[in-house]
Image 1 (tube, rainbow, N blue to C red):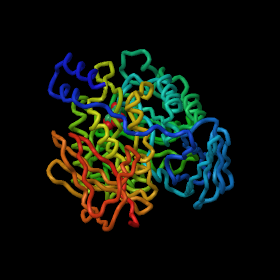
Image 2: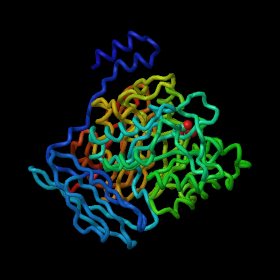
Image 3: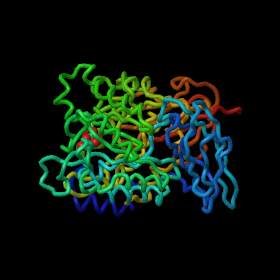
Image 4: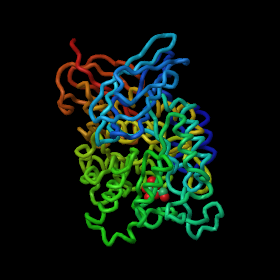
Length: 511
Ligand code: GAL
């Protein structure tokens, strides 16, 4: 592997970046899931009264496997073969279930709390989005292949749920591509999909038939960022259309709203989001709402209040392909720390620093290229997102996942940090030059801690108990390797590679 990367680096001899890459091996740290059953993913799930319910019990382990759920509220049932819980809950309240997954090696059990009320997204969303690999080439087939891949790669068994179409599914006025031409709306004013999406209802049925959920995108303005038809002055109709098509998630992207907003005051920034969330609240189906307006007007301060289940905290992380590593540190680490974003995220409403830019991405020249993030930057990317309680939405090519990329996406102990039911986002607790320590409180009283090195050379990073707000001996567990490292009394230090991370969890120890 090292040799191969070096050869690529020397053959292209593009820059120091490509030569730097040749020194760094893509080492898989995540252990392969064992054959015994393990139930993964969220431990708390929100739904509204009377909405169609779908929760697929995510479990790794040898198949065949059978599933059960004890304590199901009235109106829900579990399919013992697929582990899908479906139905409708008619009574608001909290229900505590015991999920079970069994195979020839034994049974795993885990509690799941279902909260039937007004709040969705009680943990950050997990899924895939088409934008960063397919951009304006997205089609029905691409979405179906993505759903299939989410199952075939096993991502679904680790809690990934949403398969989301980004921009470019609607008609594009003025386009010279026949597939994008046509009537933007039907005679009733309902929005049409373009010819690449011949039957949206059949597509979401297909995605749901895999135990997954489907997402769609539009803009409150007349057109989307890529110039396709948006929802301006048709908001009610478009939401009805998405509901009739069977979507479960809406990304609402500001874009051309700029031209009709009448200013950039707070009221104007909030208006389209207030409007759409009011419309969504009336629907007979749950749709998670993602606000995409790049952090304008300190959206984190009001994103929850206007009905967002998440809000983008900055511009596009992959706006420039070569710029992704710099954007990771700027928009991932610094925007968050400078604004104390941990104060705003929580169950039902999350800070969204954009998608996981791993694996094969669009090169914006009509082709694809491997992420420009080095292997250690990729570990930093996923680790930080989990510490921040950010949505884990992968946006590389899900049909071309190499072992390393899949290992980054499917480490259950790392995902457990992201999906922790307490839902308290982490924060930067120490910064000494390029060395940073980030920490997140978890429901069981333990702490997830990331030791990051943003410098250009390997360095020792220290997590000091007093800075973390803990005292006494702690068992330190390496989450990527899923291995206990020992008991430490007042600090833990590790050698961290250039732009890399060591992610640990600290539990009180009796010794
Ligand atoms: C941008 C948005 C991206 C993507 C793109 C589609 O405004 O931030 O995530 O959705 O539009 O055109």
